[in-house]
Amino acid sequence: MRVFAVANQKGGVGKTTTTVNLAAPLAVAGRSTLILDLDPHGSLSSYFGFDPDIEEDSTYRLFQNSNKDPINLIRNTGVERLDIIPAHSALATLDRQLGAKEGKGLVIVNALEKIRKKYAYVFIDCPPVLGVLMVNALAACERLMIPVQSEFLALKGLEGMVRTLNMITSAKGTSLPYTIIPTMYDQGIDVARDSLQLLKDTYPYNIWDDVIPFDSQFKIASEKGVPLAVFNPRSQGSIAYRKLLTTLLRITYELDQKTAAVA
Image (cartoon, rainbow, N blue to C red; front, side, top):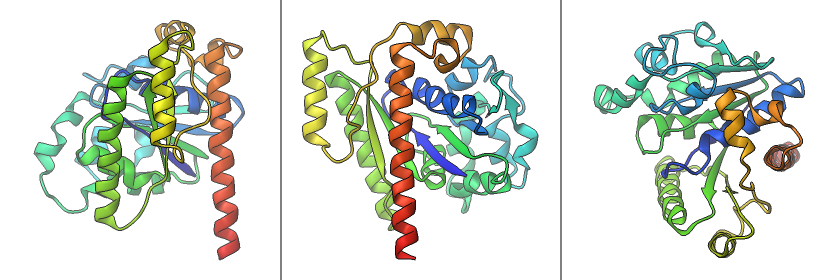
């Protein structure tokens, strides 16, 4: 099982879109894939028709009862081999409920271990704030994907996300690789081009070498509750996410090979 998290501390950067459009092509290609919604806003859940205000079988249950078997919370998205554990808005209360209780940073790690043999890939849609949910996602994943809209205000959100990541990994004494994904890119806008160049200059070793273009098909697919990879696989946005996925899988494979060689 390969586990990836998608996060940014700024909203509106394409976080849910990235989660859906990285996971869906894998499912379409025949790989069993699970998406996990840890965001109290529940955008990922709403995308597939689940209401985060009333959904009982949700990721919130995992934190209420850490021994709960996640298999009973899994729902199908309507896309074959693409499953979801949706969110409940009560996730927003977890930091207040749990306080400093020990072991609550590993709830998702332990839950995924119980279904390790069921899924080849897991993608976690994270909340936009540092807290127990973000800590769980970062503890469970092997790589963090950070979507960043191609505008200067979004760069400030990225700085906050990188600081959060460094703070958490420093406290644990481990490192977590991350990939910055320029999203909603419009080649015809000066600000977008300048922002992209600044991203490349500032994070040369962590930025993906391509972009996710602005594509109105994303909105249409979202309104229909269908991943763009299914709704219009030939659209610019769908093609771009498949390129990103190819890069992600290649990086993962190369790391596996290096690890095996050292072992």
